[in-house]
Image (cartoon, rainbow, N blue to C red):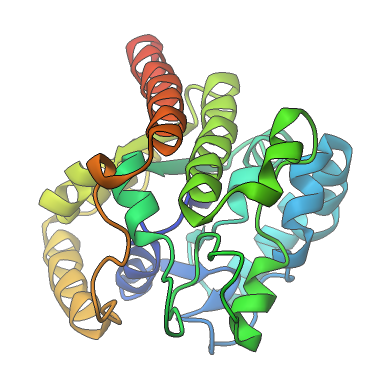
Length: 285
């Protein structure tokens, strides 16, 4: 079985991958790598296909057929000797619908964090960002890693946001990124309601063991009592090795944003929260 985990980023996804990878019978990858970004490549690289797949459903279908097909996933799972293969990756957001269409027994988990805390955590104005998930300020000088990650990051390609983009700073761009990414995730949830499983970020932070145990049971990979204890220990160990974002947030709370930034925030928040509540209400299975 294959489980894809997707989010905007800054949702503890690398932490989840590291913890799940410590459990017997499960191999959890982070963006196709086993263990972490320095680990061996288990699945073909798709990071740089991200934006093209966002622009074109046909391109997403091609990438999944070539790099995330049932045959590719089954080969990786058998090579690792596990029953469940997990890939935790930002690029899964734009591939999710197509993966679930082409791989009928696959499941997905989507993690949705609130807009304000995502935007505040998504980038640094100064210094090298150790986890450059969001759009940096346009004036910031980037290092090679930050530039590489930015190559596949989503950005507007049609409509009025294309014209607005050059004048936007990091806050506006990351509000847009949050809205666009979660809209794509909700689209996949709407089309595959029994195989897309929603995780509220704050529920996860309060009780990660319960959330992951419930997720695994839902996809028919339940943990027994001993394995649940192993998961709890794995989460503690993974947390101890996580890189902390030194310096905290470099973006203030929403009440310090400009009127235009607050308007963009309110529109994005209302749209996505409404969709999530609607989809949670119609969820079956």
